[in-house]
Amino acid sequence: MTDEELKAIKKAERKAKRIASEKAMELHDLVEDRLPAAFEDLPQIAQDTYDACQAWQQASIALKAAEEAQG
Image 1 (tube, rainbow, N blue to C red):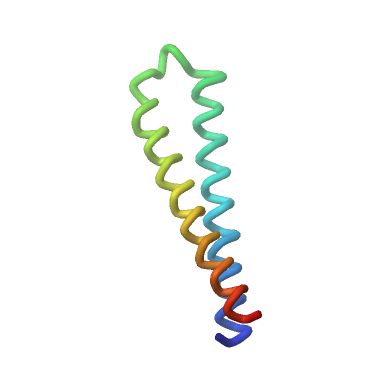
Image 2 (image 1 turned 180 degrees about the vertical axis):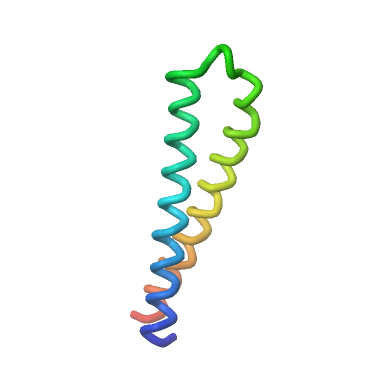
């Protein structure tokens, strides 16, 4: 694996983490500020947050594997 490929994997992991954090903040804001009135938004925001966290987890696994492979 080249240094450029490793940099790309690191960048993807950071982006996935940022998106997951943004979705978590959106869920937090819903719970803190908009519930119970906006309860209908809860399933979609929760699913979006879950999906973003899963994407971050997969990116983290890929980064760890790439770093281990590079030694």
